[in-house]
Structure formats: C-alpha cells, structure tokens
Length: 118
Image (cartoon, rainbow, N blue to C red; front, side):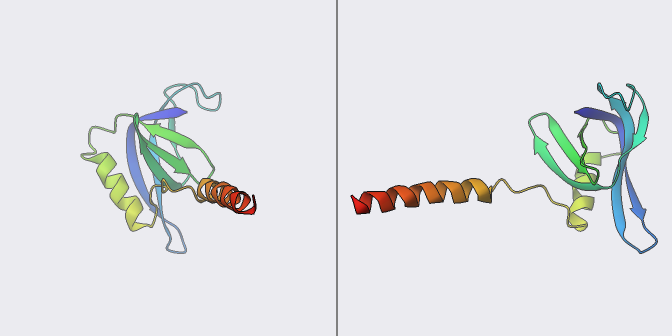
C-alpha cells in the first residue's frame, strides 16, 4: 500500500454541485505507476478506516493509501478529514460483518436442528 506524506485534503465541487473530497500528497511506496516522491491527487475518497498504523483512505477507483505525515500547514489534518467525510456521509466501515454472522448463525441453527432430529 502506498503512503502519502505531506498530504492535504481537497474539497472539490462538481458542476452538479456535488462535494468530493480528495487527498494530495507525495507518494512513498513501490508502485510502478508512481515513482517514490511523486506528487499525486487521489480520485474522490469513498471511505476510511483507522488501524494500528494510522489512517487509511479508500478511493473511488479502488485504491487505498495510508496517510503519513500531513502538510505542516494543515493543523489537525486527520481530525478535519474525518469531520469532512462524516459531513458527506462517508464513514468508516462497520466492524459488523453480516456474511460471517449469517454463516455462524446458520451453522448454529443447523447443529441445533440436527440435535433435535437425533
């Protein structure tokens, strides 16, 4: 996963009036598309998650970027980004996994049903 350092949040408005949030920064990583230290702007963000290494943002094109150090001029950059995304309805994914839950429930119900038949 690429890391963005010296990043800034950009809030863009489309002709239709839709607000989009993008990140601009310098890439650290081994991606042949972006030589290390390339300056890029991401496609619009669709979500984020917080993990042990920090914040990871997901883009409309399906890319994920770890956020390293923000641009020094951006005070409280991570908190401001989270607020912006929350305003736009872009929230971190829930830890609830309905597929796992359904499968677990099915297995438990199946065992219960099998026990009653015996």
